Image 1 (tube, helix red, strand yellow):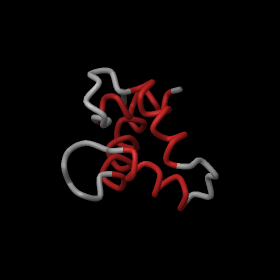
Image 2 (tube, rainbow, N blue to C red):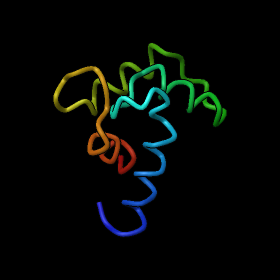
Image 3 (spheres, rainbow, N blue to C red):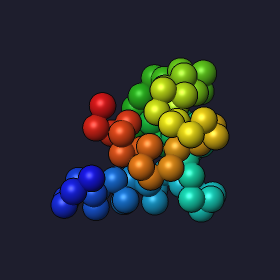
Image 4 (spheres, helix red, strand yellow):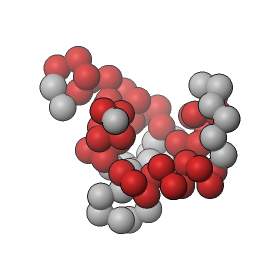
Length: 71
C-alpha cells in the first residue's frame, strides 16, 4: 500500500469493521456492499472473502482487504 491508496484502505477498513474487532467478516462486508447497491448475497461474499483470506481465519485483515481492493 502507498500514499493516498493506503489512507483510503484504512478509511474503508474502519467503516467496514463495525464491531471494531480489527477484522472484517462476511456479514460486515455484505452490509457495506448492499449499502453501495451491490446485489451480492452473503454466500457470494463468503466465496469472495475466501479468495482473499490469506491466513484462512474467516475474516479479512487490513492487508487482506488491501489485496481485495487492488483486485
